[in-house]
Length: 135
Ligand SMILES: [Zn+2]
Image (cartoon, rainbow, N blue to C red):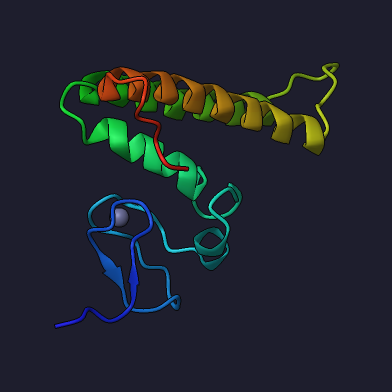
């Protein structure tokens, strides 16, 4: 029987019925987002990462040899984002508040650094120079 709906673009193990509502994939926790579904490089919105970035994260998290390190990196990334939010909220008087663009750029930088580390893990996990992860 053919499944109705849309395959989760991250893990491919779950079918979303439609784009209505705020459904989350029970396998990988990706929150359905029509813009991201159409544009795999789009990283704004309900999900912290873009589809392509989540795929890298999912790959290293589901690989036995890289899972531990990937979980560590994911936690680091989570903590870093929390502390940045806190920092921006608790600016002391006299401190110059960064502009929205600067704040946004800092979050982007942290995200890209995280993805770079995940990519390095991914290269270790594939162990072959010929295998490049399809983006
Ligand atoms: Zn999924």
